[in-house]
Image (cartoon, rainbow, N blue to C red; front, side):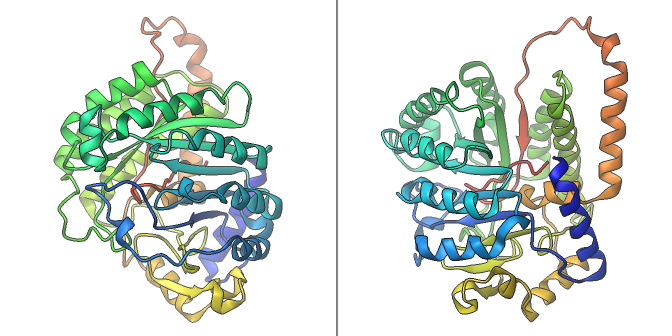
Length: 394
């Protein structure tokens, strides 16, 4: 975490002065729109493919360099690319990210554990987080994901991934649920199954959004706040009832704060804290288009047209226009991949979290006699692409 502090200062200065003093520290790399799921909440698999080659990624990561701290390799289904471990190796060698996150639908149960083990070997000093998608239990999951037998395959994939944990200390295994109108009423049962049966390192929940990127505009998949708020409160309850120490205590404080931002964003329909998408976070589409975020999904330039120099694409007139628009509050969303970065770069939020954690540290010796010692599941709530993930940037 300490290595992030100089990056945060540069991000804050860039945002305040409207200058690009450094490249973003958080990158989402959509490696392909290809997907072997047919989810009711996502049509990304219908989009045309023009995927970057490994050579193109090598040039791009070399141009980004050490400004990066967090990479999410998303899709589509990222594990469909056989060269995914090579992409991670290139990003690791050129950028030395602290965190690498990869979501998966778990369908290729005979392939995914081995491919992820290659990823772990390629980035031995990064924290590698793999999130398995789970939108229901048994047949319900198969119906929402559109693939018969998906649940059984996902469980086999999960078992294969869990077997890796004893051999790789930098590996965290999570479960990821998209909350939509198809499953919002069943969240408690999903939560209980994940907590009691799977016992992952973390549980990630996101709200299904209608987005241009996913071709879901007008599909009516997003649950209203009246239905979604109990889900958020259940997630917050899981955090507040748990006992954490060290870095986990800080991480959970940020997550709890994020839930409050989600609720206010959905109700007030505005930016609750300044959004630094286009400054501290960015996304690269499969064809090399550079976006400030995946919600607006407006290209500021294509890396192929800029000689694979990220800085060149990041400093275009279009990029400046979008940064001014975002700073003016002309858009708002609870996208977690940007929101956690926003919180880390927002001094009042940092101060508030520090105060909260400090109080808990002081009072914790007096709360050791609490009657409820049941293990509570670590929970993250994210809002973004169906497979992005969008995970914690803190």
